[in-house]
Length: 197
Image (tube, rainbow, N blue to C red; front, side, top):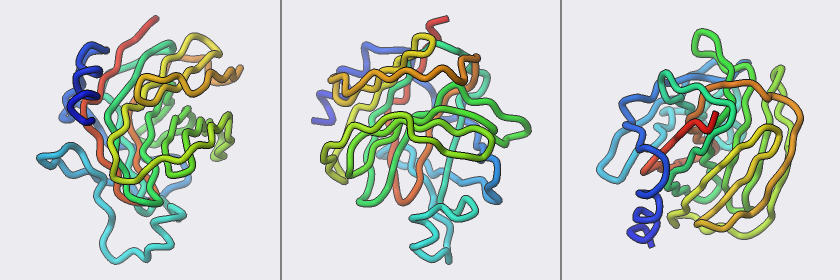
């Protein structure tokens, strides 16, 4: 399955070198999460000595890693990656990210977890769910997660199937794009992003 998905992704937007990512944190979080480069992709590094319940809740940013493609700005874009996650974890793609000094103040995030695919908006320190497609997702399985935006319209795809298209009238500005890992261990491969502006 991973080889088939990698082949599909190879015809998409340009590949992002993981070295072109820079770590950021969301406003209200004390910690900036870290990443580890492995033979199997980029994995978020969970902080040592943090209780598992704090990792699950992301309290104070514990166990939350986010990174943006350095220099990338777009309003309308395509971003995609091959993602895997352990039970309880949630890998995500970020877009229309506004940040200052490495602190994110607003963004959209498309996330997978065992409950399905979710679209969230972060603004003014609050997370608001935009849309959820409830379906079982298996931990430790590779998924091809893709987001395409056109103005207020945002489509989320998994393994080539469009799960939903949602509309939201806010955050219609250009912004950064990248990845997020929270609530446990997540792995990213074949990250790709392209502006459609």
